[in-house]
Image (cartoon, rainbow, N blue to C red; front, side, top):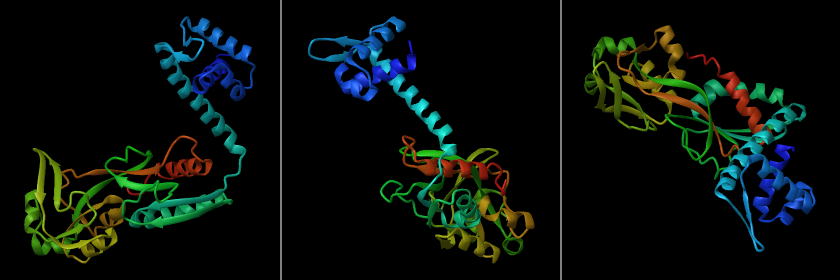
Length: 298
């Protein structure tokens, strides 16, 4: 008995609601469909389908087996598509969304490389720090930086980034260096408008979690603007290391209170569904995963 074919036949019968209805989808005669189901039940030692003159219904074992068959057949289809895709030319338009600063700093140079690998693909890239609706706005893929990805969508982790509390040495020479989070309440703060917790900043220190409310002297909806203000000695800022790693290495900015850990965020590739994922999207996701195996800010 061909178990995989029998699973396909069983699944077709369940979804069609009858043996006759399953004939076209599996390309078999009614006696052959009946034989596959009988052989499968004998092989499993369990009845899967209750047969009456009017209708078919699944047994408890049949319901469980049907769900597993769906998963297995889907995995087989994906594996076949993966192998077969190597010989298929990827083509079509990809609509991509990404955060403004991250998109400019770390993604802009990648689009040309991806386009060179797949000359039949066209790219439509939109940079914005707002949270876009992947489905409603018809994005094929969105790069999003967050603690957790949207559970209603499919995501792949590309890299991680941590938030770094920092300032210029010149600012610190004038105003002093904070030693504990509570000291921040006496300092000029530069804040990012889209930071999820607003002006409430949390840290994990030697004695546990600490939360402080800071007062913003400068607030901006652009990470680049916040960085520029810090480099201009205007205050203390909390920014992701992917944005300021070169400033930290050169000494233009100094990390503060490293013993107090800040938030770590994931950088995710997000797309609407894994089911029947277009080849062009799969290729782009795999490309981004490969490119960020060793992020430059780590």
